[in-house]
Image (cartoon, rainbow, N blue to C red; front, side):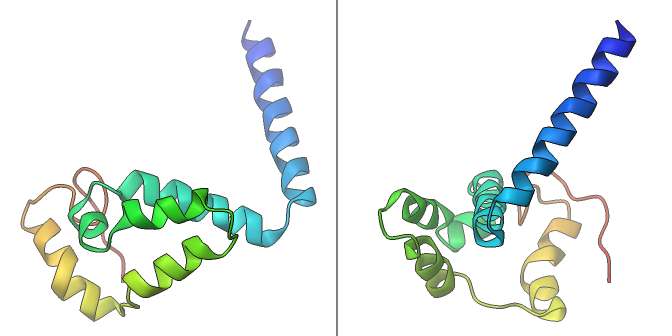
Length: 108
């Protein structure tokens, strides 16, 4: 049974790698952004920057509407700005600040 599981996992990885070869980089990045927004939509950060509204842009016929929503709602943060405004709250023990749950490690 362990061999069967290993073979299935390798087959899935192979299929995923082949799919990425035939998918445009725009579509891959769009998919990843959507996954991240879904995961963080109920955090303080996600509610403050209207992640649910941005996610509605993915449903629209206009291919770039999600990007326009994202660009108009989420400002660019440098490390110090996001650290002072958001991550400092998380280090104080508040959960779901910028990512669901409690973040254990921060990198500089």
